[in-house]
Image (cartoon, rainbow, N blue to C red; front, side, top):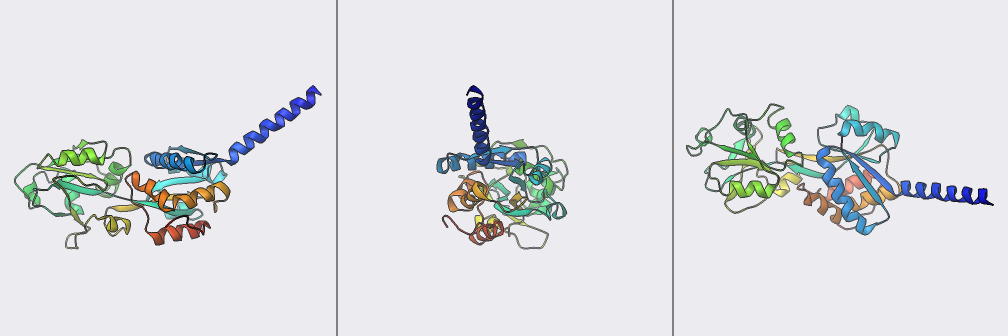
Amino acid sequence: MRKIGLLLLWGSLLSACSQAQQNNIQIQGADTLILLGQNLNRLYQHKQPGVSIRVHGGGIGSALPLLLKGELQIAQAHGGELSSETAKDLLAVPVGVEGIVLYVHESNPVNELSLAQVRSIYLGEITNWRQVGGPDQRIALYAGESSTGIVSYFQEYVLRGAEPFGFWGKSSTKELLDVIGETRNAMGFASVGMAPHVKALRIRPATGSPAVEPSIANIRSRQYPISRYIYWYFARKPQGIVKDFCEWVFSSEGQLVVEGIGFQPLMPEERLAAMRKLGVVRIASN
């Protein structure tokens, strides 16, 4: 009888462990996207308290082998981190858009810059506002949001991998904008934000091309030149709790979490296209 009891207990423990694994979603990828996964988990727990979402960093390179083995369900990365050749056998869908906005003090007469000019400024080749049509003042350089990948994106896309000239780093968009609002010769970059005495610069993709305003609509549609998708990758179409979670992420409630991190939500047609691609055909809320 005692042996039978131990076998039943062991069977119960195995069943409990199996159930726990079935209610567990593993997400891994870029370190700078850990906060996105954690915040999605935090709010989703209120809707589905029985589902546990574990979020890990380590980069998309370390996540892909685990994704293909089925040891995690979602790999996340910034746009451009994975080549089309590497991703060809995966299901890839955008879950949000990130954009980098350049800010100056409202008194600065400069209203727009080309990407080449921004690059020259942050490489220390242009150091005075007079060189780009502004006052005869040295440019004080700033950058914000060290935890969301904006600095690495800026260095990769705008500076083309070059080391930037010295700048003051700020931990958040708000902190950055507060400083720029008090510093007439300042220039800084971060995500979308607003503050007194600060204005956002329009950006020209190339010399002679029209300058694009960093409006939310232009960033979401990626017409603004310094913008890119945040991607989720799947080895196969999600099922069960992963499918339910994805449906919620593409709802307006889930997209609000994306926006709360400092990214922009997808356009409605992009959300619908992503859901269809994953086989998630219902939209919880528009």
